[in-house]
Image (cartoon, rainbow, N blue to C red):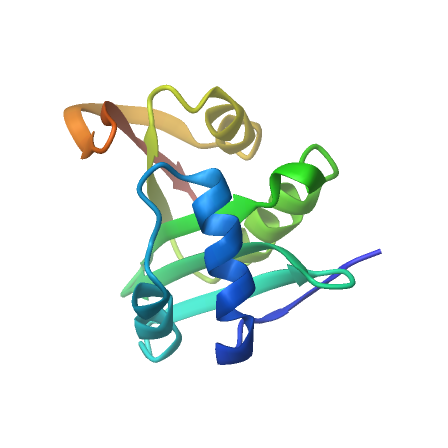
Length: 141
């Protein structure tokens, strides 16, 4: 059984390892470190024997922008992504927004399960590999 806790600098090597497994254009260790030091950002990890997933969001006024959510491929379909997303949605914010690759059906399915809806499509939003993005939005219930 895992637990959710704040991300620490010591977690970044493992977080970057997961990031590289999951995304074709992964964030750098420096990008994660910047978010850890941003007073408007929250970064959490799911930890079992080691970190197996993470979520990062930035809160600006009444809006939460989900920047990154990933789960180790070997640990998917076990509720880790849902648990991390639920923790984010517990934030006292009126709106939640995120971008996702149009081709990322499992992520889109997860977000829809939590009440997000597609509000826009952005052609060629992602550069490597080139791909369209979707903006998804959710209002606090």
